[in-house]
Picture 1 (spheres, one colour):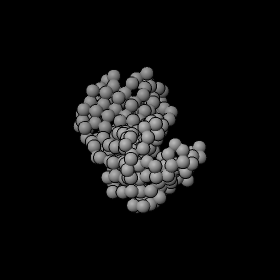
Picture 2 (picture 1 turned 90 degrees about the vertical axis):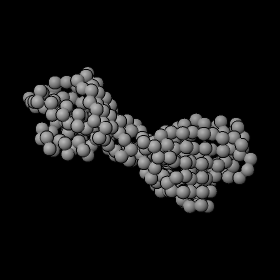
Picture 3 (picture 1 turned 180 degrees about the horizontal axis):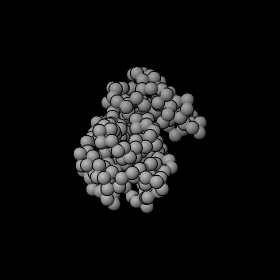
Picture 4 (picture 1 turned 120 degrees about the horizontal axis):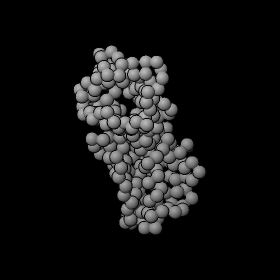
Length: 254
């Protein structure tokens, strides 16, 4: 394809491993999850690409090249012919592993600058939606993850608590709040043990829905004393790594 002299470039980091990200270019159901119901893809060279946007606009293309989990190249144009017809532009998506997960590089090539500019905001939106769909899938239920953190804090059995910690948090976890400046899982283990020593019977639990966006999790909490009465409230902000483990926590007391 020649004459595509105008490029749209976008890059973002998705908090998930490349193999998990690339599934959304090869599995028709996952493809539809970030484009719209009825969208589908035949993940092979020459395979058909079809997008049906939620409001009904349809786009088609053909896969030029695919290398799982590294890159995919496909043509792209609208069934209506406006603003670009079928085969009139080309999309290249390349994935690169990075410590926070996957860096996605997108290049969309056009014959006309005005048509390129027409797609800038669309890709801002679509790639944000894509990152959320992927991380929601990879990281699972945000409420369950927050509940696991609070249950671990409330566990009075040292061996049980340490086992929970090993599964839930990254070895280099950091935690900051009004009463702690913790670095590393060993430091956190000792800090929680001290909390049980100096605040015996205190239990944490989630208060309301947890919220998740691209590896960032927010959950409100309430701390109850041995009598079940609230002793404090606050909010925790978690960052979750590409492997699903918590790698930092910042706590705010109300």
